[in-house]
Each structure stands twice: as C-alpha cells, then as structure tokens.
Image 1 (cartoon, one colour):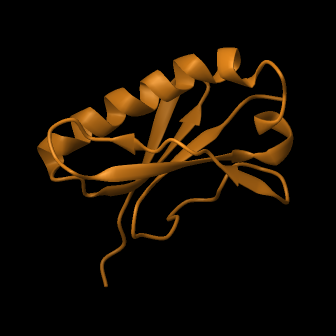
Image 2: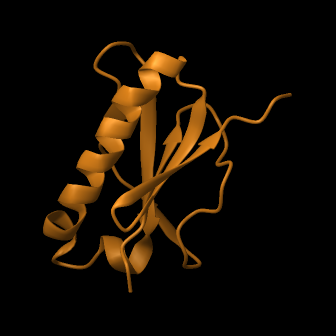
Length: 97
C-alpha cells in the first residue's frame, strides 16, 4: 500500500478526495508557509499513520509538500489541497464560490 498524505489549507474543505480508508488521522503538526501565515493541515489514512515506520516513510513526502506550499506562495496560495502520489504532488485549486 502506497503512502498518501493530503495537505489541506486551514479554513477550507478538501477539494480532492482524501487518502483511502474509512478513518483519517490529522497529524498534529501543520505545515506553514515560511513567507506568510498560511497553514496546511496534514491528513493520512489511519492504518498508515499508526505504523511504526510512518515517521521514516513519510519524511520525504512531507518535504515534497513543504516545497509545494513554498512554491504556492508565488500564486497567492490559490491551491487549497495538495496530495502526494508517489514522487508527484497533485494540486487542487480552491473552488470559486
């Protein structure tokens, strides 16, 4: 089972689907943009989050999400939802209301 982590901008709903599984765990430490005050909460499938190797397996994916958030600063953080897919980060722009 591949590890997927979703980063959802605080104050917004997930635009894409959350990682598989019926229960999700929201990680305690959100990712923040170092240039402004925008934060993204991290969600992962429960079974993967409680695995004892999760800290080691998730490190590279969390770094990818951090880079995507930093790059999103140039676009005024219009992306409300990022999700890892292997070594690729999918981005879902915020829906217009």
